[in-house]
Image 1 (tube, rainbow, N blue to C red):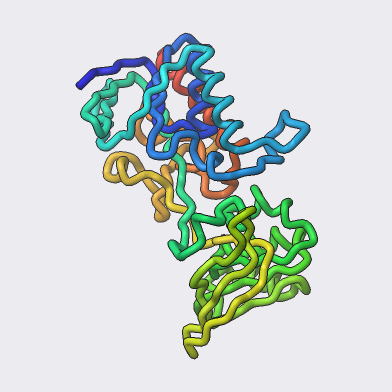
Image 2: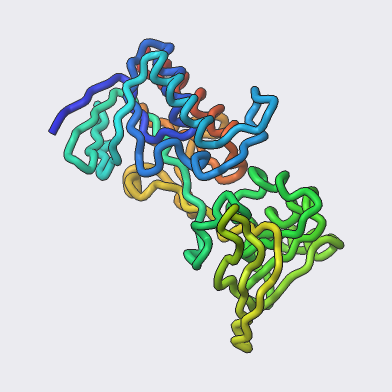
Length: 311
């Protein structure tokens, strides 16, 4: 068991964590960034990235996160491969314990643990992730220009994803397990009015089907839950839109969370209800959920932490 102390401790290594680390290191705070469950965050499961500023050509999500991490290390961040299992925010320095028993203490803490897209957990889903199956229309919709896609879900996120996809795809089919949507009325109205959208009611996705070499989705096997009838629906792409889970279980009972378990921060800031604890990226942002906005709040968190430490 080792004890690691730093002025600025950062949990999470996605766009928010890496940016906080870059700014923290440049402010001579000698930050420690703890990788977490998914080193590099959600971008590592995205193949082509076209919407992160600064690159003329498409870049790979994994490569982009590798570069961010190398930049953070280059300017002076200590990066440790560990997953935090326990945190104590009751006193400073804040204490975090890794799964191997190592203890991390920080005078200020940036939480950038992100959110995880909820997946269906059906056959073929993992095989075709990045090859036709996605959980982010704003990330991947562009690759389905003039193609036919399906969206699976019935809440606000499904309706938003479906409407967004109508700007790119030639046809969008929503697959929903009930006979009515849970989404807000205004979104539903826009959806039903759109000539590109059709809905398959009372149905669930049972399996994603496609070719293996090269990996490419060709259809979704769906089951009508009222009749039990199975059918194969041909499609070029499938978007799973059943929501996100912020990775905040560690902080329950210590930090103020909203009803969806996202960390509550002061408007226009990354400040939480505990002085010296800041939250950045998808762990506190359920609206935009983009790498570029996560990076922006990572920058804010480091600057606010630097100011906090100076006082």
